[in-house]
Length: 451
Ligand code: FES
Ligand SMILES: [Fe+2]
Image 1 (cartoon, helix red, strand yellow):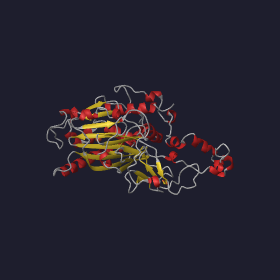
Image 2 (spheres, helix red, strand yellow; image 1 turned 135 degrees about the horizontal axis):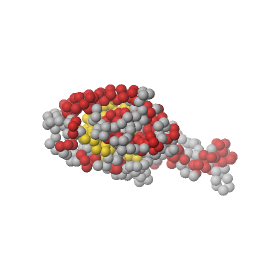
Image 3 (cartoon, helix red, strand yellow; image 1 turned 180 degrees about the vertical axis):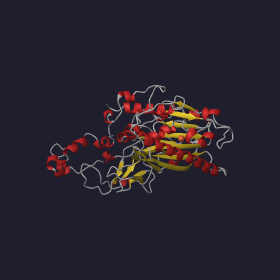
Image 4 (cartoon, protein in one colour; image 1 turned 30 degrees about the vertical axis):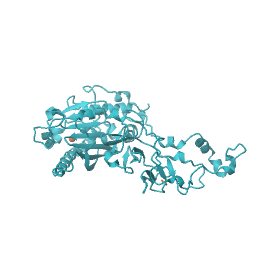
């Protein structure tokens, strides 16, 4: 396995990863894409005589921008800016966070109005760490994964330098999709017209681009994405900001020790499209209040009376001991008696469901105001023993049963949140502190929008 990035590091240092050892040596490629031939249009000072050149005179403004620095990078990473005034129910009063015992749930408009779908993607999902896959899928140089984050295509690749790199999966020519260049272990190539990029994002090969004027490859690098790893999992973040990856996941590794997630092997993936807003699904995940009525079978497995919720800065934890000793996850090495099932939520849309010998990740992807997809991945310590196949199958089946129950209630709730008779509700202090934590973080996120 290659070297992992420092969890708290920010953008990769793009200047330090030029790897001359990898792939075909393109240095000898005819470089048809270099500086425009301005020799025949220079005035006596040596500067291009823009006025006398039919194309350059039209592009004079553009040329000035180019000569002052690359304009395309900044333009490409603009995000829509939402003003609080454009979103309903976002007054100072709506955004005030009160103590759990006194607070109200978020307004129903936040679950149903289309303005919030775009605002959530640009202001919350793009600005937060997003689970993007497992390090085991990037074990060797040249291996890559694609993921959509906040509606944006992202490609993550292991370079020959051993580092994991992430970029928007968008070619700077005309928006084509990227892939690893065949026969090369460390070049990305657009699958449309074949432009190639190095692992530091720099544009390298530009076939058949002779005679293109005012074109500088330096202005057409791939747009990098912040990437980091933690316990064998890969995360990306599109917009700079707080917290670091280490701060975002603070306390989880210590809490689940001596268990670790790093060496677990993935056995299964599943995804569910659900007719509800992504926040309805997260709310439902965050409380065990609904266990007795919605999940009668699961209730028998967990000790509901001793079901506990703890809230942290960015994450919350629900944990519960199992009922009795005769259950499929019995583990004499569990961290403590109270902690045999850990259900971690990490704001805004990621869950780690940790049971003895098993990790299940959930990523909640907003698809529209009243639609989301939930992606499940199952990882296990043991995939080799004779018993493991049956255990995995039983685990996936029972999890699917619980998921079907959750889908049904979430879709019912979404329809009723859209009812004109409902606006906001209240929290159970004993059972809904996790939901309150989520709503408080949402309020803080919207409060950061410009007035
Ligand atoms: S769109 Fe990528 S090379 Fe043309
Ligand atoms: Fe549930």
